[in-house]
Image (cartoon, rainbow, N blue to C red):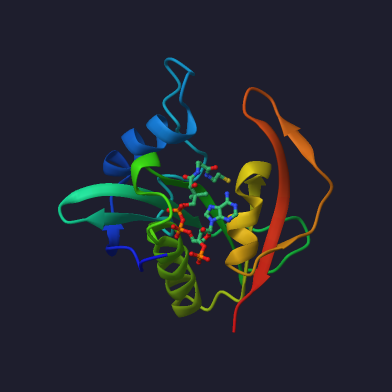
Length: 148
Ligand SMILES: CC(C)(COP(=O)(O)OP(=O)(O)OC[C@H]1O[C@@H](n2cnc3c(N)ncnc32)[C@H](O)[C@@H]1OP(=O)(O)O)[C@@H](O)C(=O)NCCC(=O)NCCS
């Protein structure tokens, strides 16, 4: 990992095309709109290599059933294939975690594609569910991390 480029907040209109390219490849017409994208607390992050957007992730103030308001969710994590392994994914996770921590968040969860589980494990997330299928996308697990 080389450390990635820079990460900054972006709007959803900027994030969505990359989301579609990476996360909805081969699914014509899918706009990759997620419930919560436009909520006031939701923040979208972009990773940049120079001026080029090469990765995205979204932080939402969404909790699992029974969890308190200190819990946040990540969604739409994606980097372009040609930049993978350069640290942009890790930089996006670090930025989202820092932001969530600043908001008083102490735990993060998400549904992880099985193919990305190793990446998240490298980011110190733990698998806390059995595998389940997301129709049209594939096998997933729930992962979580406590901050601090
Ligand atoms: C998963 C994904 C976001 C990783 O992005 P990336 O830009 O390659 O991540 P980084 O370069 O920051 O990698 C960080 C570390 O994780 C490792 N890593 C990356 N992807 C991995 C994977 N699938 N399995 C295991 N380790 C992985 C890297 O080798 C690197 O390790 P290092 O610190 O020892 O060098 C990217 O592969 C992707 O967009 N995949 C397709 C979409 C997807 O599955 N998104 C997740 C949806 S839940």
